[in-house]
Image 1 (cartoon, rainbow, N blue to C red):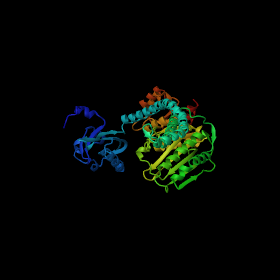
Image 2: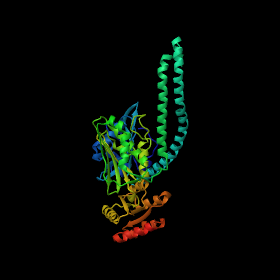
Image 3: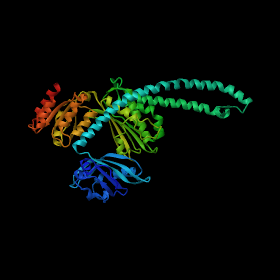
Length: 509
């Protein structure tokens, strides 16, 4: 076997596991770091078939087989969704990457890396990845705004001048026809006149349609890049918005399905927002639902209702179409990501819709199963709900999370979400910063101190108020948090009245 230039010492210091397998998944090589990750020595695995070892958790086998087929067809795959089972039976969340191993233009196996996503270093890496992605989205917004402007100027020139060319051609036709009667052999642009006479109108119409498509793309770019959501203070009746969107899409709906159903919720509270932009969301979701159908017998259902628990109006668009792969769902809100054929979409529809929903303080939730259809839910909070204090509780004790949530909700004036670890807290904070973070110190993986460091290091999160809860008052971590400026600390166990009083004092500051 050829040497790679990496010493044995260097390999053992690598946290990630480097592996190679044959096409039948017989393990050829695996780095020594596998022992630290899963408890197996390399010699216990090499020569055995991966699927026979019981390392992959059973519920992930179908997804793994799907990814395997893609790699064998020459693709590179990276998936953070798997769980491996270690030698002692413990489960570990891992990110698995795989690339085809090619010899003489033939795939002879796979090579890749397994990364342990349960360790602190990997959790920090994951958060950093999320934050980098957020920064990229901001930069992308600035970029597309400039690109849209540069595209729009020459496109305006095309749109203004094409009608003049059509008019000039129509005026020239009688003269050219007379000339054709006298000399049937003359050509224009190297083509016989009788052919060019039929083609020019089609060419001009194509130019107009292309220009209109450019205009639509530019508008999508502008909507995505626009930092200002426009006027957001108008009273909005969601049922009226849905009716208007359906009227505009009536022909498309009729062409797509024989089973279209609408269920309007009763006594929905008025929302405050931008009617036109909310209509744009519904139009986009219904269009996507129509395009997801494979025959006219499949149904689409649009519903609106009030969710009392969230104090929000919900718009639901459900279809019985082809559905969405689970790995794709995580990407569908990203700008320029599209599952449609080239030319059928810009990949900005859902990205723009998601931005509009966020501007209204809401969220889009997606559930789908391949071959069984999809459900998109737009959750829009009422004005009363928006005025409530947003609280995020991060604690690995489920009983504590639930009791604190119930106590705050019983008081009124709070919107409460809960997470069970530091990584989930950071992701939530990045997506929708809370007004108040109730944070446990001692959590597996990423603890409360690491979460506070991230908040401290990012000025845009400085408005978040943090209440530390801990059962270890004498811990050095408590002093570390005080030194960082996080001085509001409640020691477990505590009286509920003291907990609520501390929150009131913190929010008044």
